[in-house]
Length: 366
Ligand SMILES: *Cc1c(COP(=O)(O)O)cnc(C)c1O
Image (cartoon, rainbow, N blue to C red; front, side, top):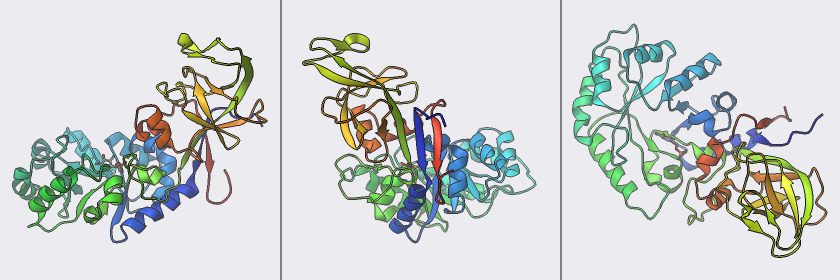
């Protein structure tokens, strides 16, 4: 078999472990697994097939993602987080049996204006301070009763909101948002859903009827770097490639575009077949670690489209063709994100199409 160079391995055993961890945090809650953006870069359908039996519902951002799931035969509840703007979309929601977030008065108006041959399940989203999607707290009681009178809306309406700062345990905003949510919904009977991964981990009082984990399912911490409690999550995605050249440069010579790295002594360097064309961040700073034979080696020079260079001076017995871990198993993507001045979400989502996918299934490899 021809060895693959840049590839990701998806560890589905880790995925199931992480689902168990989510349930340990919130044993009373139903789990809605967030798989928007191609399941955070892991592959929408593959992840959905693994999760659909393990969780209570799935959530995606957009209608077309939900339709793709249905067309692939994925069953169970699926929530469309961004809602709809047109009547055609409401009809599609009914046709594909998708649940939907209602986050504006205009959407309530649209639902009032139509007659359907069935009912759509609605999550009514309140903006408690994020100021992105959601109705204002003072609109809640009126819009709820209007929704309850719509013939095309299922009577069991779930109340939801979304946190802006739950990753920061020292920030007062989460408690403020929760207070607003509880005040607004307190007098009404209905299921509630507010917690994303960070809230599930750090804000126990947010674990209501439905929790909405995203990042933590993929084995990555959503918390800021100063959060040191062990999470016991396992990374699902590992990014790998191989060394395709090893060479010596002399003191004073430069490496890569922009000649940004200058050897301060004679140096042995390795060229790795991966770059920003695969989704490895071009912003990764000098010294960002890669893992070769279980040892960390520092990135040097600029990341180019298909390659990057590593200082091998402190490695031993490194050979052409050796595997390189860019993130994942043994090298947290959280750390690489910090070295690139970004967050792990963008790195996972940014894996490009040319990167091959190897899936490690619970029963042997496929
Ligand atoms: C993306 C998203 C989530 C999941 O967020 P994580 O930080 O990945 O856990 C939950 N709820 C909503 C509304 C989202 O958009």
